[in-house]
Image (cartoon, helix red, strand yellow):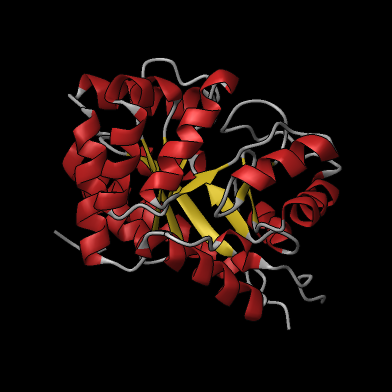
Length: 289
């Protein structure tokens, strides 16, 4: 199986480095710190585990790891409320092909053993609740994940979930709503860790609409109020947008565009097309001097 201008402002990226962090979570913090020192943004590549089947998804994730500083392993579920048609179709196919939650943890274990790439798991609350929050967090840590993104985390479940991830020593990656007010950003910054996941525009993943006019201001405000690195996803659909976002964000998050690239060709050719796009995206990111 193959293995796959103006400096950024000074930010205390180690703020989330609390005592008891797992090695993977600490490594993610160091990766952001290194990116800050080198004045470069990290490429975060999202891909759903099990699409179009488990083996090809694993090959694709290995290939993406050659070009990305962060891999987001998507957990397919029946009601992906934040996702647009591209990811919805991919996750539906993954479920049809027999995806089980254990596949996500298995993929993380294999990738963490074969690569130094930073791993995040992106999941909706349904799979977490069904598996058990503490069990899910512990399993993710043991598989080598640095943190977990739960975009639809219910407010009433947040305290227990935060306790579970803190107990496991991994990051809860907050995803604020677009245009969140200062008080909300400060609150999630006090409880989350690793990075802030900032939406590039309102709406669903996979959108090719223009990025929000106030995105740069939002990113800088989120960084100031949370003292966490900020990654931008949703709406980063090509290298031109990735380059623009990298001027002010700490990470550039791309998912739907990679899936589209894979869909253009069957089998290994699709994996190579996704990896080629990841290489293009990575090389487009600005290294400030």
